[in-house]
Amino acid sequence: MEVSQHQLEALRNAVENRYGQTLNSPHDFMCLGERLQNEGAGSLSVSTIKRLWEYVPGYKTVYVSSLNVLSRYVGCRDWQEFCETLTEADTSDFSLGEVVALSTLKVGDEVEVRWRPGRRIVVKYLGQGRMRVIASERSKLAVGDTFSCSGMVNGEPLVLTQLEHANADQVLTYVCGKHGGITARKL
Image (cartoon, rainbow, N blue to C red):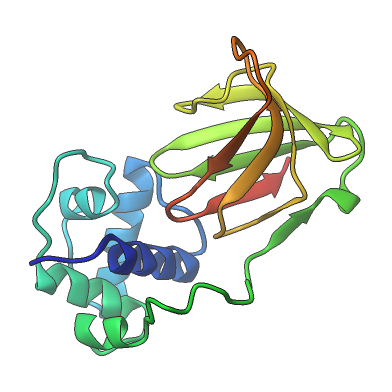
């Protein structure tokens, strides 16, 4: 079945919002599979969930039966009803995601940021809206990179401005979680 990236991304976001966190590890996918079954939405194999979350590359076929299970989990009758709740033209909305506001951080505070598929950074707050990357896993950001941001909203992309990146001869802008948003938490 042909499914638009927008629709699939919206479904993954809805599932993660209901689940309460970003899915980015084999353990997360296994737990979601158990929760789907336990809550009466239906069953999906861990490998199917990994492919739908693009954790396993190269998977293009999407079955309506799988989308129906995930749609039921988020409160819709089926995939068709879920799609009817989406409007391509409506790209602005209020966010209900939890916020890590810079005004709540003190110099030296650390924040962990995760996004799909399996990317993670830990940043240290330097003050005046600036942060330094102190740990990086499967990300293009490198330890020592510094950037500015206005705040972090869970479930939304994170835009890093004035990024001073290792080996770059110019200041950059970088978007974390462009598809699916980020999950941030103060450590």
